[in-house]
Length: 164
Length: 328
Image (cartoon, rainbow over all chains, first blue to last red; front, top):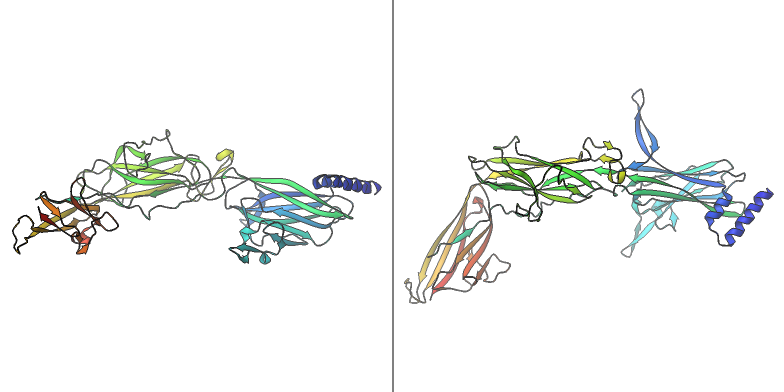
């Protein structure tokens, strides 16, 4: 515990000295975040029953729906609070409406990366008028965990986007 | 008295409305789609941010091609030695691709087989829209067209029309194009053979395309019948200096085809002078200037009247042109 406190102190000092938050994160390393890209593939079992499985997406053609998953894992002995995952919709991709979800998370979207809200609450300015944002204009997804992330636990968020 | 000349430009068809809009779909093959997430959280009172790995997927190449006919039914006559059919080959995939071209003129469903010229496929190198000396012949495997995504090339298929065909006969000719990387059922994958080493995937067209054009044997004859009426200044009909000659020319097309972009030209007879403002088409006055209306009067290189009659068919009926001159 003393060691931990010391580490935090050092990290805070480094931040004060102008080090990046990334350096701070590495120095703490409590929550590791990882993204994966997968596509749905239809498989048929011995009985001829069809089902869909996710397989890693390597090379995809335009029009393909890619399932993006972000996993945040707490490797520390303390709980992490106020955990928020931010993921921009990758360039050249269009968000599938209402596709983002995450267990125990509140999902919001953003057009500009600043204002986050439910998809139907977001607006854009066009020709001096305000109108609801369209799915292809939602460029950011945010998951806010309602509860703390306990030691050893993981949280994940997922969304789907189609390659333009 | 000179006889009127009628210039019939057969085979010149307006291409308006025929351009096929075939757009490539999607992000360029080989593009890397990257994703990085960030997480912020607090431990105790310290808030911190962590950045994920970057996950990338690579855009595979779609193999798609569309062949479109650029000329409607082409009017021909028996024994015509060379007649081109204009096609466009478009790469509707998302990466650069080489295409192989083939043509055939032995097809069912028509009345005669056009005779493929040798060579029978040309690129419209000078973008003239017809076969001209600057056009490069196509040789399979030698100058297969390489098209970027969304690019197209205009291709001419050239045939001769056999002797012995008759009015109303139709003959088909076809151009085929396929992707050199491969063809097949949509979704067929050629691993690592796409642009920049990505996979190539056959698109909805099967990576091949074809279009069939039609030659139509058209006998169209355009006739012009010219009559004149002399009115002298003394109320008589004597052709004396100062007398006026009113000309009436009736133009009509007969047969099955279309006389495209027909133009009526008539030189003003020697020793006479055109009476300004007397040019008429079907009783409607045409101004003498070369402007929006169909007619004009010009003095160079020689004095003449001209009326654009457009596309004439038998159904168009008679076109009546009138003008007047005075005897010098």
